[in-house]
Image (cartoon, rainbow, N blue to C red; front, top):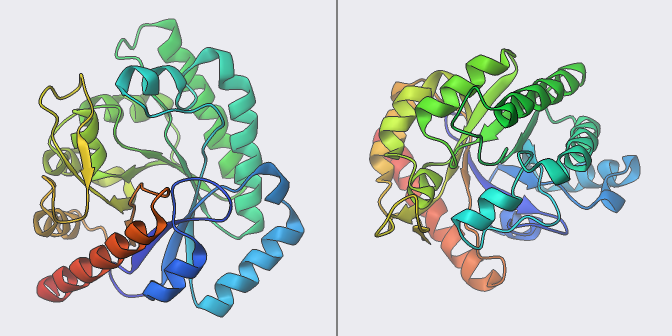
Length: 280
């Protein structure tokens, strides 16, 4: 596969992604998949899904975990509900991520990814150590499946994320870099962050956003690709400089407006194809 194949974030029955049919219509060769509901995570469904992908000539590059009860309504709510950091939901969610990893194995997919949640800033805190331990456990489960675990950027600064990865000490722990999330969460300039975390970047999202008036205290605004503050020509040039050649996976989080979502993903495909040609 050539450098930077275009991808989209896709969904079967849940989540923020486009339907497979949209990916096919847009002619993209790769997808990341939002993990389907537990009832669909069976060997029979995996076989059927793989046949659909083969007929569409689409390659699956990552399976993303997500959980009931997560809310991105605002930054405090996200901190309280998202990922594996909240103690009250952690055990059930860890078990579910392992089930998702096992389903990804049925799909022959070597990458499992997720939002870990807001990792505590204080590395001496008990909660921080708990999150380190649970991430080690997940990495070990993925390793047994021949998989790597990718943490999506957003809730941490580049420096905090690097410290966390170093503390986990697992060589199958990497980063799914989302430049817009750095802006939306107010955690740092995405290009500067990409230079810092580059050695760990194994998958990326192409999503755009605008800074909030008070970054880190209130949400930034997600916007169509090319209409925000990321700067995608600079983004792709930086990806080239750090040696990243993998898929450019478009994510546009407006599933409640499927026609608009499809149109804006199509616009993103054309924008990225133009930039690829320019930088070839």
